Length: 284
Image 1 (cartoon, one colour):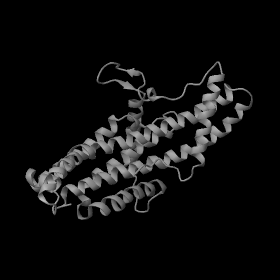
Image 2 (cartoon, helix red, strand yellow):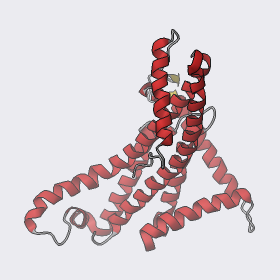
Image 3 (cartoon, one colour):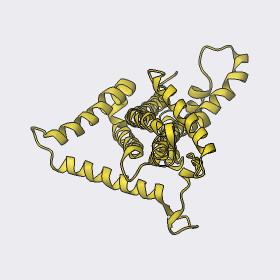
Image 4 (spheres, one colour):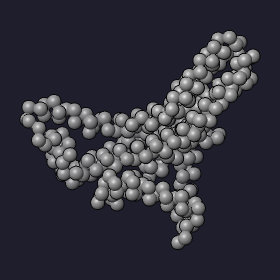
């Protein structure tokens, strides 16, 4: 599921116009325009540079986000009342969404067993995604693959562990690598594919899907808003009017990025639940 397609081609056209005008303006202007690049995701060290404990801008955003998420959850839990206030009601709606729409819908009777894990994943991914549109932070913590890899590794270890615990090593491998009902000669083809899916593709696609969406969203927003600044202060003549288009595109993509942040948190958590359910099913 992509999560990066607009329901209308209007804003795609607007972004295309902005990008084209930026290239034309940059070629005609002495000041030039420096488009966003992948270097955005590898900032210089702020502390402990060159060590395993290096802190750069993205790590700092992660620390701030984690502290804020923990504080919000603790505050919601400590001030819980029988008649919930607005903040408590919002938190309970989020918790109920994960419990009902993800855990119970996907895992059935096993939902309660994995609910703490799935709830943690959903709110963590949502919080780390939403920093991409938070002023002064302005970058999703999940746009660098380290964080998605940690979360994907957690899911990977869990679905292997619960599957092996229930069926044993042999039973788990049989359930996952030898689909029932196939002619024996087909297992020569099917089993290697299933092995790649279980041991490589599931965790890899979890991490890559999330990271790619957050990277592309950040680059689009930087392009739009840096373009607006360039058209206003660096361009001349009629090109200044393009700032209106780039600003409108930036605002629209900001709203869309909020939707993508929520959608990617949902997809990551839902797929995690699906993989856990496949690990404990008798056959699939």
